Length: 393
Image (cartoon, rainbow, N blue to C red; front, side):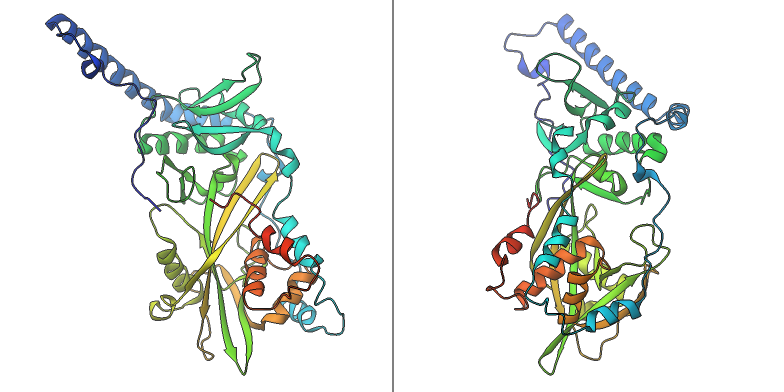
């Protein structure tokens, strides 16, 4: 990804001193410079108002009538054990191996609410669409009129047409600070603050316009990128996947089954370096092993839930591990690991909701690539294409 601070504002007009064709008189030059100084002073004052502790506290105290269920307390831990998962995994004679309906259900879980896309409006920065914001959520942004500009629709009524940023926010740094203050001001409306920044861009590898708190990403409908790694071994002709069970005290998806290694892609790090970092933190995989992780593609999905519009792209990696390797979690986010035959992991996906939802897509992609899904199965091509049903850009 291009991690440069970002492109210049294309809509920013040129300086009058540069535009002028005729000789500039001393008085005109003086007045122009005075106007520029006044403009800079106004911008500085706007920044000061935005960052005023009193203002942030005032906004944080106000009632939030549009608050959704997403601001509820963290989810309770999953109500199943490894014994439950392994029992389902090993059950034979059911005859569902060629039935892809269980896989389709998992794809659908990651792509909910697409009939509600009309409830969202474009979020523009430098005339580029970087996200989508729910019309109801824009009501919370109106008070931050020195950060956001709510533009009415073409028909001139009160309908929201799109959202953009105040023209005084010209640099990625200013935008990041200002919007960060907004996130603080919104308080309980955006739960689960991570203090981790995601780059905001029109598509992968394009200029970064600003950085946004990870927990706020779906409320602004930005594209979020992540890395997921299938860690597997092969012994006596059979492949097995290392599967993790998330800690019961994780803020999100506690107790669910997960990949050996996975994580969001924050600002300023490449996919490969992120995989290497996550390998060490989540599974104790040394760099000497993790550098062998192979990029094998991506999956994508779009999920709408209330004010939240998730537009995620997951870069997929495979890592064949030594048969005697045993993972060890280093960051406390994983309760334990189990080594499960790939065919058994497929059973868990088809028959249960034990896996964290987006992990299903990455493992189904693994099943395709390693020959565990037969082309003669009804729905083969539809399932294959559905794994990239989101905006994979």
